Structures are given as C-alpha cells and as structure tokens.
Image 1 (cartoon, rainbow, N blue to C red):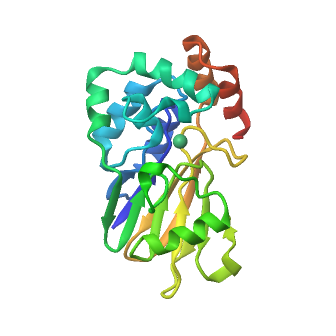
Image 2 (image 1 turned 135 degrees about the vertical axis):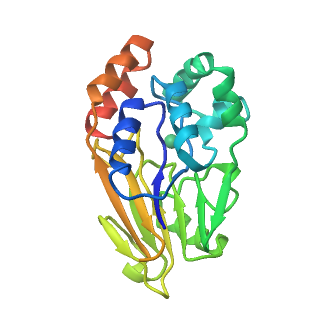
Length: 241
Ligand code: ZN
C-alpha cells in the first residue's frame, strides 16, 4: 500500500490543493493527515472540507484542539493566539464538528501516527532535540512513528547515524532500525524550504520518501492580508522559516 502522509496544513488551501494534486499523480492508495488542519492560515473551512473528503485517517493537532476550545489558548504565542481567535470566528459548525471528532493517534501495520509525540500526545511535546527523540522511542511499539508538529521535515533513527537526525529525500527501512519521521508541514514549513512538504510511505517496499511541492505562496499571503492576520505569519511563508 502507498500512503501519502500530510500534516500541518494550517488553513493554507493553496498549498493543500497543490499537494493533493501531486498526490493524485503518485499512485497513492490512501491519504493520512496528522493534524493542524487549521490555525495561522486564511482558509480553515476549505482545508477541513478537503481533508474530510480525501483523508481516510485524520488526527487532531494542537491548533485544531484550541480552535474548538478543547485546549487552553494560553499555551500559544501572540501570533498563534491572534490567528486562532480569528479562526474560531471563521470556522463553520460543520468544520468544528469534524475537528471535534478527530482522534489523537492511529496504529496500523506495526506503524504509529500521531501529531506531536507518542508519549502523552495530549501534552503536545515538540520532538526537536535528540534527547526528546530518544525518550520517545520507547513509547511506540513498531518500527516507525510518523509525526508532524515542529514543521521540520526530518528522519530520526534510533541507533544508526549516531542518534543524529538526518535530512534525506528518502529512506529504506532497515530491519533492525527504528525511526521517527517528521513529514514536515504542508501549510507553513519551518525548515528554510518554503515548498509544501509531505511524504509517501510504501508499506510493501518499506520505503519512505519526501515530496516538496511548489505552490502559490502569494495567493495565500494575499488572503491572509485581507483577513488581517499577523504580518509575521504572512512573511514567514516566503522563506519557510
Ligand atoms: Zn502545526
């Protein structure tokens, strides 16, 4: 089976559209979404509707949780807060209903999928240091755990590569190795590559590859400006920081 794994769309419909159109050319069987469909971006309802239509597995992200008032907004910085307050007003009852039914984790074929981290996913831990990553490896049963949340596309291997994360366009899973793979962000990449990021998992070939997709950044920025969203959030899309 070939699974396209998307995450952190953040209301960026222009990016999502391009990613799905690429997915449609990659012989994909299913789409999994690891959360944060909304927050930051100008088109939350459109993104929720598209994910609802296309994703067979869809998980809750921290921005989704705050958008439906399930989590405390005080955990957010000024920009995230401002954007999520705007998002709350914007979200339709239908979108809110969809978000409120999302689950935290998914396990299938000895693989784990979660927005933030396998250990206490509701605490929204950022796997952004080797130390945190090493702790997480004992909290999922199988060979690979797929995450989003940091918006940085990176592959972390437990033993190989001296426990260092490696940036690579693809990885073939080795039998005795275990991995945490961050699929990167569709709607707000933060790894200095402004292109939308997602990944393709091939469960028969035991292989994962990244795809980076060019989209109309200006279009999203114009919509953000019209919506009165913070300039900092608009600017960061230009260089993916
Ligand atoms: Zn996010």
